[in-house]
Image (cartoon, rainbow, N blue to C red):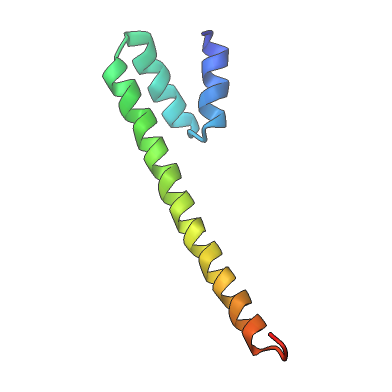
Length: 74
């Protein structure tokens, strides 16, 4: 994998510029454990965001359900 490909992938994964530089530094130094730590932290942050947004969708679904229940014939 080229550095350019790596940077594009990291940016597509949502890493900030500083995080990309930190990752590249670890990559160049062969610090696999640190690379995995950075990727794992980003994944955890994304997963937390997904769960927050799933909860918001659940709240919206509940409100739509309640509105439908209050309508005549609903």
